[in-house]
Amino acid sequence: MSMNSSHGLPFFPGYTFRDIKKSAFHKSQTLSYKNGYALPQRPKVGIGQEPLLSTQLSLNESKQVPSGTPSVSYGSAAKSRSLNFMPSHVLYDKKVLRFHGYFQQSVQHSPDEEYRVRPVVFYYYLEDDSMCVIEPTVENSGIPQGKLIKRQRLPKNDRGEHYQWKDLNVAMDLCVYGVSYRLTHCDSYTQDFMESQGLVLNDPEPIPADPYAKHRTKMQPHIAYATPSDFDHLKQFITMDRKVLRFFALWDNTDALYGDARPVTIQYYLVDDSVEIREVHEPNSGRDPFPVLLRRQKIPKVIKPACEPFPTCVLEVSAQEVHEFYSPRDFQVGETLKLMGRSFLLYDCDEFTRAYYQQNHPDLPLKPIQVEKKAQRDVQKVIPPYNGWGSLEDSLQNCLDFIPEPPKKDLMKLLENDHKVLRYTAQLDSQNPQDAGRRFVLSYYLSNDMISIFETATRNSGIIGGKFLEKTRISKPGSTVDDPQYYGPADFAIGSVIEVFKHRFLLTDADHYVLKYLESQADRIPSETLDSLRQRLGVSALSSGHQEQGYSEATREATQPTGDETSGM
Image (cartoon, rainbow, N blue to C red; front, top):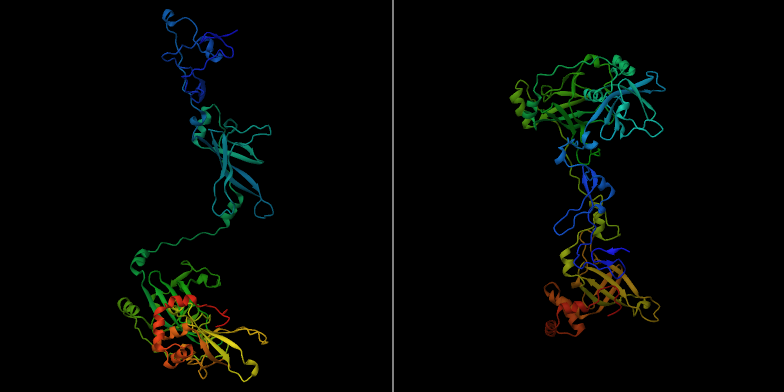
């Protein structure tokens, strides 16, 4: 039976007590790290704590307890100092061994070469025994070069072993992923490291030359380098920048089929002695809109005799093939100049060009030539007659633009008169007895001056009511296409006849909103129209004025229906 040493009670259920003063219930740290290793940590003996007993020591801690006689009685023994521990990744950080070598690549189906010699560089990283293989880039080799094998531990055999620095040496073959590499030499740091570890390096070897590269060097012609010119191009760029000579010329193209003399402008850029030729297109000439006849470039004047037999269409003209380029002295006003096989008559130039020649080349005379220019005829635009399809404005847009645009609208009128409609009752003025009794509602939209007609249905009449006329503008009889006149509120008097596409409608009635609106526009409405409305509605001029004060226009607009769905008055 064990006893509870803290309270002197048997360790039975009910005989143990919990320390009510304890506030921390976490697990205490028992390990400490030193030089990268986890070591057990002894609890510190504080004030009011009991010392660590020998029975509480673990097996590892008991082995570390010093045993033997004290040094006070028998003297001090020589203590060996422990060496400072340093991990390998710190000791060998940024320490790399470099070996140079090559491998041979066989070439098939080539009569000029059997194999290629491709030099490589091996980098061995001592910190983790990894290696990478890099092939230096060779100019104009045509082979994708660079990193052949990325940094990794290279396998040595099928047993899972990897190459280490002890396996490397100079003048040896190294097989990596089925490719045999030959290590020829290394740098001085690699040699010092290997010899410090007790390894003897073999004698270095040279990398053999590529046989195809040697053959290609023999077949390559001797390159002749041109002597640098004494002319200061930088001074020319600084002093002549944005200075251009402009000549007006005629391109004589009469030798070609349907050819003629075309006007062009020749621009000579003094900054780099380049020339550009642009065509001057006349309006409605029918030619493609490509003004650049000759892009900006230096035009050769005299080519070296050795290059003349070569086809000029495939000759890349450079300073080595050209003996002389065109200069400002070759452009003389009043003479014919031949550029790139075409003849150009220089008949005039601008003011800057004249001042340049008078200052720099006074010996060259300028002789402008008067060239007959074709008189431009002002062709009047003839608008074809109206064909009856669509409105006049829409048909006219087809004659103004290639891609017709919708006609412009009066936005202020649309905003001010939106949802404002004048409604009249009409009947068909016809000699046909079947049209008697047919009632129509004629709506006039003040926002766009359009008219729509709706026929009210009558039972047992045999005529289906509904929309009779879509919203459109109605022209008055006798109006012309050049000066069209459309119906307006001033024409809608009670008893008047409105002709709509060969149909005659007799206005018989109107609502009170029509009278109020026309009285607000009395200065633009004939008095006959207002009198007919007052007489039909039974309203005098004085009473209509008092009634207009009693009702607001906004209230009247809100009570008016605004669609073609009006069924009647």
